[in-house]
Amino acid sequence: MTTSHQPQDRYKAVWLIFFVLGLGTLLPWNFFMTATQYFTNRLDLSQNVSSVTDKSSKDAEALPAPTMPSPERSSLSAVFNNVMTLCAMLPLLLFTCLNSFLHRRIPQTVRILGSLVAILLVFLITAILVKVEVDALTFFTITMVKIVLINSFGAVLQASLFGLAGVLPANYTTPIMSGQGLAGFFTSVAMICAIASGSKLSESAFGYFITACAVVVLAIVCYLALPRLEFYRYYLQLNLEGPSDQETKLDLISKGEEPRRGREESGVPAPSSPPTSKDHSIKAILKSIAVLAFSVCFIFTVTIGLFPAVTAEVESSLAGTSAWKSYYFLPVACFLNFNVFDWLGRSLTAVCMWPGKDSRWLPVLVVSRIVFIPLLLLCNVRQHYYLPSVFTHDAWFIIFMAAFAFSNGYLASLCMCFGPKKVKPAEAETAGNIMSFFLCLGLALGAVLSFLLRALV
Image (cartoon, rainbow, N blue to C red; front, side):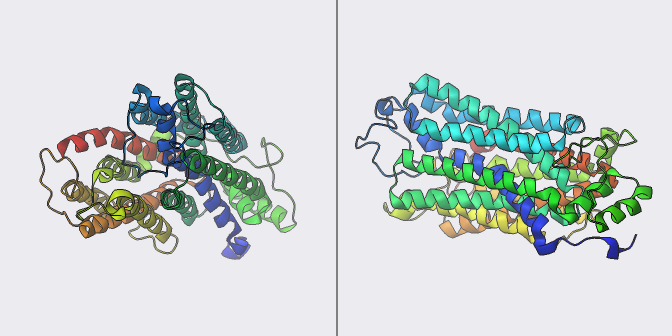
């Protein structure tokens, strides 16, 4: 089959759709985490009565810096972040694992579209609750249930998208990674704008949740438009059919007819719904992508082990109580800096994919990121117990964070792009799901490692 038969991605429409889907995967959860100050504020005993509907002066206070603790914290507020991490990581890992095994039994349409609709409903409820006053225990319970739901459906959505991108050319995993990187940048900018504008906590949170709803709706519209694009249909059918059927498929596409669907539902094609003629062994696929799978797991273990558990504890070395030191240092030097360079690293794989999928340099570069552990631990972290502050100047921290973030985005994106291309086309979706599982495993291991690294400082 010659390349002249292959349709082109006109106007980069499929690429842009996957970018929006990547954005819709992480932006809602990022906004949820950005609003953590709002959740803890409502749980504080001193804020219970005046939360949301009360127009007291406390609610009108400007959004404080993320590192500034609220006075007179309640027991629920004190454990909020720990319980939130638990309720986020466990469902994320569990449902990503389940999706790796069950994605062939549940149509892709149900997994992706159903997850987007579920996340949209959760955020609509969250936005409504900003205006509704409830007692602290009920609010805490509802919030944790929402966190479980968001991460459960988010895990299925992310794994399914990586699996779907696996049937397309290698660089079509890049827009998903880039979209996820932009989600972090977007939320960092929103946080800084909220601090600068002096917005109320409830108003900022409501804006976050409504924006998240709008992005999810946009992602739903984009996904529904995907099967109308010839480029997408071509690679979808190429994945479903054997080589002997490819010419027949090309004839159907050239005539403008809908390709043969087999057991697929009418409407949005579901590449995972019809089983292939061979039972592709997950063990065999894992063996083929083992180096890349463990590489992406190692990348995120190191990243989450340091960011934000250690990096968010670094303080500016400038003397006095300037606005930079009190309010803007961490949002800019830590969070915005990380998200900008992480996004740049993820996006670079659209034009450069070095080293190659079989190169030994890739795992070497991945393992070399361990150097960032001592570099960041020796920065100006507050309350040092065992390690000295060697790199005290703000510039050192900003440079280390930029390199740390860029290497995370670039190397992780490379691994996720190459994983599905290490196996046969019919096994690409399963490989994409397995890669997504190891990505989430890295996040979970990183969360555990963060406690150890923070204790070493």
